[in-house]
Length: 218
Image (cartoon, rainbow, N blue to C red; front, side):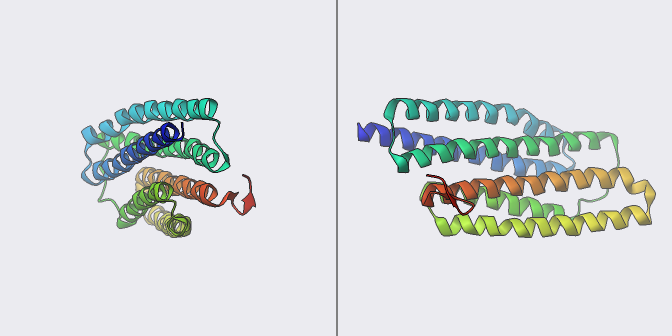
């Protein structure tokens, strides 16, 4: 019975890794589409959102089936509860990658200058945070999870700096207002992706310690 349960948990972990890979790819493709003004690639990102939604539903069903059929003990219950929390944030990350892609699709009708380096820096940090948060769950690495949480301050700092730059841009040239708003929205979506990666890492801490944001839950 225990072997069957462990196999189901392993399968659940593989699905989480697969979902993580899909959202990392979505963010990376969105950033490539932004850099290259590649409308077709942006549309691919939008389409991929449905695949992630379906995988989220499959993981949710699998998790609930395990809970109902196996009656897991506290430690295993934490793992399954963490998986259910993680997929919610992971699905939202993919939504925000698709939101970025929706903005890029509009670029077909407009002329834009090169994308600022801070956007690329934010995107790279976000992809790394997502990847490390999932790795931390699979390997039960508390130190790695805490490192992801700490990285959120770096993403927030980049966002604040970029926002100030855009305000200055508008002040210097009001005709850049529409462009600035679009870029600010993209940066905000990336900042939210960082927040969701942090949420995932915080649930990984819960999975390992039984504590969420310092409070014991299970």
